[in-house]
Image 1: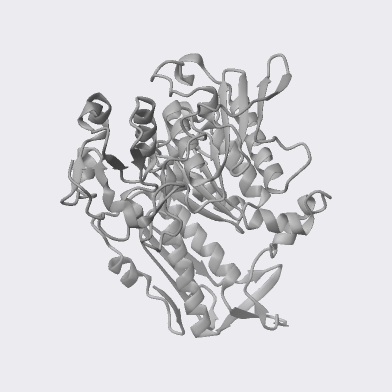
Image 2: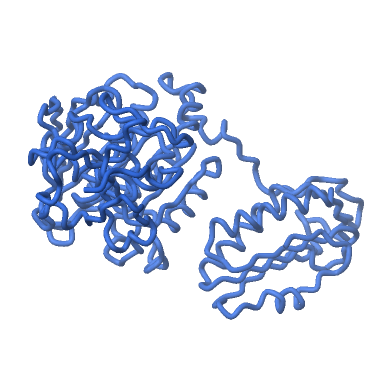
Length: 501
């Protein structure tokens, strides 16, 4: 609730109205009329406002605070008319489960109210008055000011800055690599940033993950990072995806974005990103570090770039390579490669000379300070980027499905639909009467249950796992196994009835 009032502010009544059983903290701010301003004695203060516009903008500010901070309630009152010395001019109240969110939301509201509302004031001094002035405090910040040193670069200019602003980039992993990458991309002016990160801040993160502080321990990384980035640059949009990316949800998470940056620290996520990027034709920049060295590679959609599986077809077994908890990691190493990854994204978006081509692999050893740039080729036997036998869905608003180069929508009834979702997903993706249920974890071991002369359409929640499984079965000789692109989530109606197995 935001209100502009001409009567004295009753803070106690509002405080009681905001009481909530789930609130662990209540933070208030009171702005009073003081008797001095810039060395002049103040006798009285008068406010005027466009009430309707002020309340509309004020409510928008409160809604923004609720969206950005984990709070329960937020309210603000602003006086107009003539106020005496000591009277309350503005009141802000915030309740939240945790005090930090309440403090930060309250500060945000105060700052935005002072800068954005159509409210004017006139201070009456002992020897005259100030005249009517806008209540905005502090310097006005514009995008031209913010990016001024970047715009003068001949490779960027205003046109390049506009390209960056129109870019939508997903950063997967907000750890050592991700924090540095996000900072550089935010301050460079990437218009929309997505953060995919399921974890909370741990004490062992703080020496290298610069977006977090000691007081953020046990708080969700995605939300903390988003909050800091919005304060770094008020001209960008930051979206959060506080969940663990895997083969089943990767395609859905990356769908709204133009570019994807892999800042993860595990092979399961890296391979899931690789497979989904190829299947969804999304450009992907992957980075990884090990002690004092690291690598950087770019997959350019539409350029026949080799993917991760061209070099290593199989996902390494869990624990095959020690994590940084065992081998150690230097904060400067993570930061350097994170910023390097952000720089490569900017070079790719703006088509800089010297950007990595889709066939190149960059390896850097920070101890010897050596940089190697390797060429690599697509693997004709790659199970992902050299195989087109999947069902494509050209328009998610349409129900006309096309099988690439082989089958039209009219013959979908020839398929037996095989739901490979695990039991945890089954309730959300119910099978039709003519659909087999064979969980992913069991189908590879029981592939003999599928008939060689029958066409099968594998379906999972989001399409990633079914694609990978279909390719594995084809390598075992099952030529009539296909995958439904984007999975159950993309279907506008129940599956078409198919022949029973």
